[in-house]
Length: 462
Image 1 (cartoon, rainbow, N blue to C red):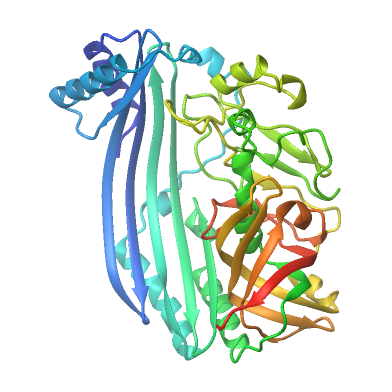
Image 2 (cartoon, one colour; image 1 turned 90 degrees about the vertical axis):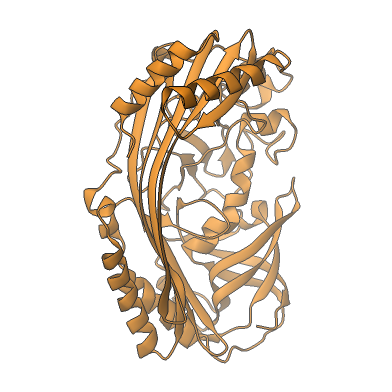
């Protein structure tokens, strides 16, 4: 694996090889291993390791990037030349800022960085993954189900160095389990990941997925319409994840955000609080952005009011002189930019939902529901109306009818058409937020939610 010391030595050589005004090198290194299973047996085991140096040069306001995964002198010289030659044929970018110094990158003060590298996770071997898969299969066999999924483990490193003295480094591990249990006419699913493998209980996940498959067997079909819905955390994550691209300054400038003309206004229910926090103990990922700026904890929504959006350095500078400057709340670089050059600007990637005053478990939400629908997860989600944030998609892998405070039976799945603005204005109860994983969005810290008048438009045939 690439180390900070090795990366610093590579960067020093790249600087010597370059004639550019400024040089930045982003390093990524990873060792990733995956065991895949289907039909109750392991059918694939793969492992790969790679390290990449991504080189950005700046020549008089012209910038470009090239990369190399071989670090001998000749390979690095070719990569530097490629970056410089690409930069020379670009038009100068009038909005391009000088690369940040170490002082600028940490101007907001250094935040405490939680440990995200765990030796026990890094040391997971193929035999250990196979043993865990064996336990998952045993659960499937006991319930007379067919199971499929993955168990992966990884260690990674990410760093950034530039010719103005910035040097930062982050190392992390991650283990992930995803399980689908299949019956004759039903299914159940669970997924979770964590930097610390000790936070993953694969057998518990398998038992939960199996119970969903068994309990939803022989599903009934009921009429579509507006129902009280109980969304488990994975379902909340996958649907709400579609709005966070809009919480960036570039999206406001491009007039492609549903927050245009809505910042400072109450958009959601009073019980909705959301922030971005890269140092949260349940989060993962790098503490700095694509330019090396330290990620700052940002309150995005307070009591339903959208307070602000996040910024890359260049976007913040551009916003301050734009016609929107007085309408978007505080404007400052927040450490959420992507590597330059890019057209997307920035995005909050460490979303944390605030805990409610009186949290309820999913079981308590069920007990308080006269008639509603319990949803394990959502999939195939697509945007219908970008400004009203209306999404469509389907339920999957465990959809249940709730009546008189109890789960009665499995249901055929539904297609939904729902506005996130409406949904987050109709939240009646929430659980304690926890780290959740899905398939349609990035990992977040989210609660389960009980939502009234969720709009299901049609039932599916499965």
